[in-house]
Image 1 (cartoon, rainbow, N blue to C red):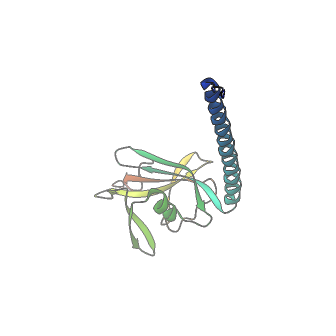
Image 2 (cartoon, rainbow, N blue to C red):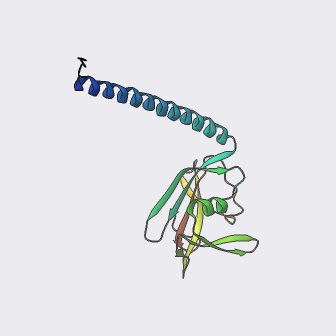
Image 3 (cartoon, rainbow, N blue to C red):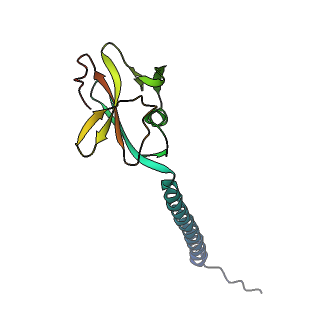
Length: 163
């Protein structure tokens, strides 16, 4: 007579559970290592990118008072306000006049009647918005600039409301 010992089902279940635990722990460690590597790569890339870009803030204020801020936007050194607006906002209508660009619409809201898209820069020392004195394609952005597009009522120019 052969005597076979019955395998305890609890032993098999425990063995399967232990194997699952070891495999799960291996996967967790693998993904954690991949995550930390990617995080370090991202930090290095961002550091390298800082030497090629400026951080700029852009405000777009619509006629109904809605404001859209694009803070800390990285733009290549040498970009104009117009370049940034095209890439950041996306939907921009414009015309070329007098050797410069005139923005006529942003995100579907167009200039009409006495409403015109005007751009401003923030004067940090005066703590005030300053109306742009050149076309948006002529204004070259600098590190830390804060600029705004404002759909303003220009019927009482030069007394135009500010953003």
